[in-house]
Amino acid sequence: GGDRKDRAVAGQEKGPVMKTVLVTGAKGFIGKNLVVALKRMTDVDIIEYDIDSPSGLLEEGLARADVIYHLAGVNRPERVAEFTEGNFDLTRQICDTLLRLGRKPLLLLSSSMQALLDNPYGVSKLYAEEAVFAFGKESGAAVAVFRLPGVFGKWCRPNYNSVVATFCHNIACDLPIAISDPAREIELVYIDDVVKAFIGVMDGCAPVLDGQYCGVQPTYRITLGSLAENIQGFRECRTNLSVPDVSDPFIHALYATYLSYLPTDAFAYA
Image 1 (cartoon, helix red, strand yellow):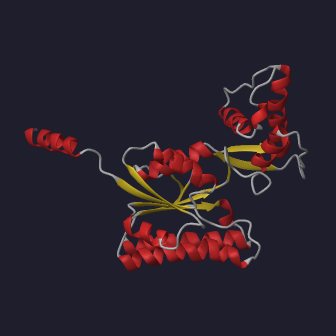
Image 2 (cartoon, rainbow, N blue to C red; image 1 turned 90 degrees about the vertical axis):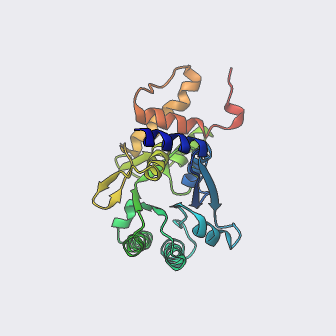
């Protein structure tokens, strides 16, 4: 008992152990949200890497990081070959560099449910997953691969690859929306839940949901028609002076997302 107490006191004197965390794709939708959350933590030193970062920053991060959040990737390229270059090739480069350096940090990969599909994007994500699993097996490093459905929340680019961002932006700005099939159902996760799950992995809580893959809970399923109806209802709240029923977790998250797309001159109203 006395020895444990002495060690505890000694540990308190040293303070928290700092972790160096590398985030690739730090300026992207998920990356920006993750970095904001990490910066609230007092025991984390963050290296933010993105496509416009200095060429040596990635290798510096790989040489120092205790934890790597590999979020960088390509999903809307000009050339089909960019899927492989931005998703598989970059992931393989990261894994090969870590092996060359003899390092085995915790490596988390943000992948997609589209890795199950036979299209250029899905195949490139599948190969990236396999590279991460192979690195973990060869090095003994802990790895976590998240297959995410559609992610929604603040700072997601509209008119790009998120129907929630597009609907929120267009409806908030009084622009038209197009719905190809109102009955089509989509699966979604909220960005705050994604960030919570990612940070949980760093703290030793990997939410493995499907064999070797990790996932985020809760997930939400909604038709495109219902999604548009809910967001249009948020807009009408500002004219009929009602408040949405945010007791439902999905409506709460969706309403918070909608508010983040309001033009600045719509922050106040008569």
